[in-house]
Image 1 (cartoon, rainbow, N blue to C red):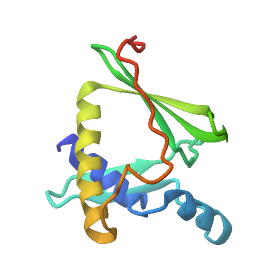
Image 2 (image 1 turned 45 degrees about the horizontal axis):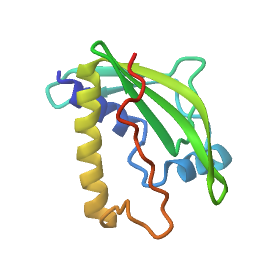
Image 3 (image 1 turned 180 degrees about the horizontal axis):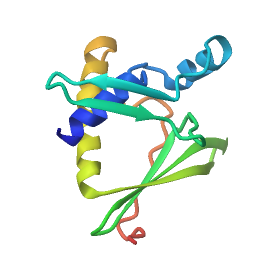
Amino acid sequence: MADTQVLEACASAWGFESPLPHQRLQHQRAFAPESPMSQTITQPDNTRITLTKSSDYRDSYANSVQVRLSVWDFFLVFGTLEQTAPDQMDVTNFQGIYLSPQQAKALHNVLTHNLTQYEQTFGQISLEAPGTQRFVVPSNGPVH
């Protein structure tokens, strides 16, 4: 089974199609029982995938993702960004995830597919909103 199919199956099974995941998570925590720790789904080709949440699994909201890469892997650092003054942004990082280049490509495909569906349903996503802070990505950034 292709990595993108597995990622799509996982995203669908855990309910990541919500347009506002941080609101969905708050709603789930307030009104719904805990999600099951294990779930099995069957693909159209009859491949069964069992998704299991580890004991330290946590749902989190991130509005900041930094990406570092090397020849061996991609390193995604998730955090929350807060503007503390007109000229000051603070980022609090809470999770780093390493992905193989192949898994990063599969994630790219799944995100592209889901963004397309989102925009068809809710309208075009604009990164050019009034007052949006534009960040400069240094060309000599860290690679490890």
